[in-house]
Length: 102
Image (tube, one colour):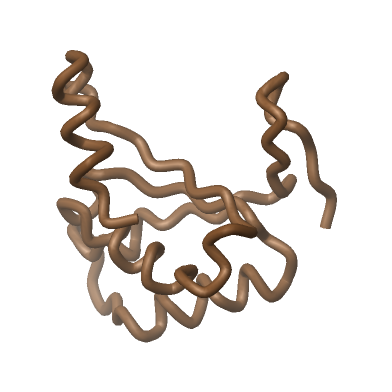
């Protein structure tokens, strides 16, 4: 796996990022939390250290699955979670961060 610096932030991310929209279950059929967790752990074992999620993916369900799956290696991964486009006021962003399940 290749790793890159995220701009000038000092944060190193994997060149492959795992998206977790499906783990939120909304708009997807047959998604199982256990299988999502296993997939996230397998991605980490394969060298992926960067995971993408969002508060809107299953109303936070994806964040919860990602957070639970990676809790033992949290200090070794980067989780990029996004706020919904209608939550961009300062307090809404802060609330979304504090409400995140990660």
